[in-house]
Image 1 (cartoon, rainbow, N blue to C red):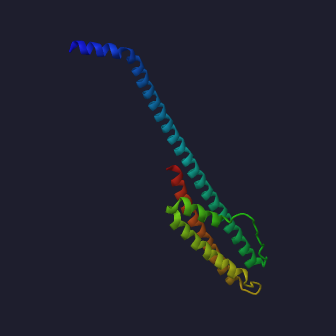
Image 2 (cartoon, rainbow, N blue to C red):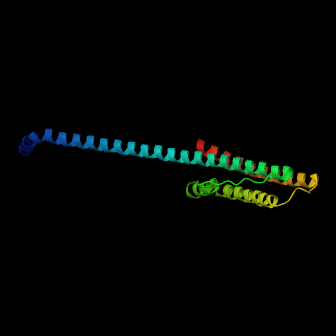
Length: 177
């Protein structure tokens, strides 16, 4: 029995360095593979977070643009009601902020969909009154009627602003997460 072990040991001895080299290479390969996979996963997460942050920032900017547009429209309505100034037409080749907002929320932030729908609802109310007041002749209207219509459009502007601010607060929470 000792003779068999001794023969086996003398036969294996030249291969021990080869086996240890192969095992060491396998361990090094597995370590390199695991490190590369870990780094790739981390890089993917960082890029994903960057894309989400950019989308959150874009939605925030769109909300600011929408608020600014409504404020400008409000000013035009007031000038029309109180001073008879005609509305100026705005044309743009860009995608309207409301459409881009809808796209971003629908594609990436479905949890904001309820707030987006509420925002659209108050914007439509504001727009409907704006159109109604736009085609109303205020030249012979008494000041009390002009003031009542001004108050209505101002209240609707405040509703739009409130909805935008609520959505912005949610976006701030998303950005912190």
